[in-house]
Image (cartoon, rainbow, N blue to C red; front, side, top):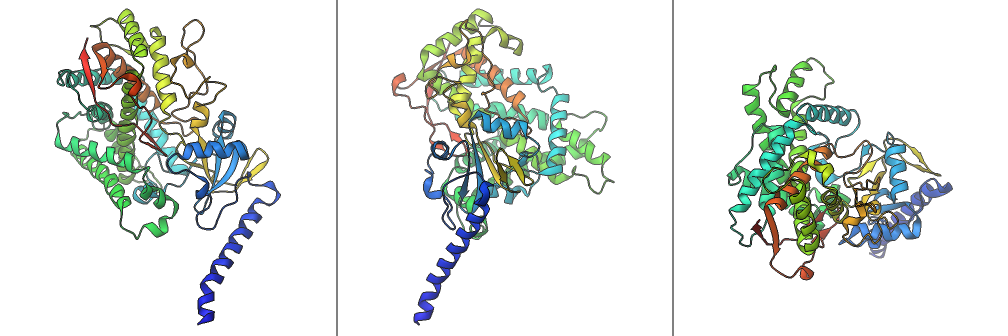
Length: 493
């Protein structure tokens, strides 16, 4: 009995000793960046505030430097803090840092397909094709600008239906960017009351809330264990599949009406490429990649822009003097009756500065999507082993105190020079940078500009409380910063 009682304790001790031996061996010779000593199984989780992981990562950078090693559970991670370290990795050594880091809660559902969470040659093929197709359908050109303008008009009409009464803008602000991406993917838009549309919007909203939850965090740390437990992580995967099934139905409709000589949208272009490569056994252009690429674009093209819009309206109510200056500039340059267009952008330096400051201040993806090194990689005086997850901390760049004085303060002056002209800066990285920069950056910038200017041209934003009482802090800070729920009144101008 005594021997049996000692065995579990002895096993734990031996496991800890082996773990510490392996960890010290991996650090010998200064090959890995420095970092806090991890504990078996949980790594450095005790050093992190799970309610605000980016702040914890910045605090550790003060102790261990701009490049340091952290263990998230059993997983080795190298954190890059500050512009110099992030730029050096993602741009100067972009080829070595271009792989996607592990994200089990999504990887286990998408199986490495698509454009956002794929790796290697598959990722290169999907990204190249997607960029080319978006450009051919006018990303940054007139045709997509007209689609965004049309959706902005629909958005204004939906807002007019509120008749200046209090309402939560979350749903309507999700519908607008979703319809833009639907027009590119499927060549159609949905009425805002469409039942399928309502269901998908709710699924996306729930998953973006859940991605920061304890369930998803635990799953990402110990997926081999969590796969066998019930919980909200199962619902998360089911909602990802809901979007996949929706995209698959659209693909089947397109297959029945496809004209290879007259592609209507992204799906048609992909189906035509599948036909061209059907005799190539190594092709990446198959049905599964089309389904997941469509799902990736649908999801990313909807919720990130929507969240930025929601944060933006909240900030303009918090700072009514900023709202007033934006509206004065719009009235002076565009007027009240002409639809804003992208050629107006250069004439609206203050409005452009406000849009940039909103994105900087909210830092929607503070920790970026995880990268990884696909081979043993020499970085500065270190060697980072193949497969190591890399976290380029975007919040450390967007809140750099030297580039943005008083970074904790919302101040459009961060993007204006002494003459009131718009000031560009390399530190503006809300879409990341390097080879994995957001594939829809151009579209997102266009949507934000046209939606914001059209809303403010037509309405004044009225909060239900005094501006000083408005709380603009995200309800959750983690992988994503989720905007708080609020109501407002839109007063026609």
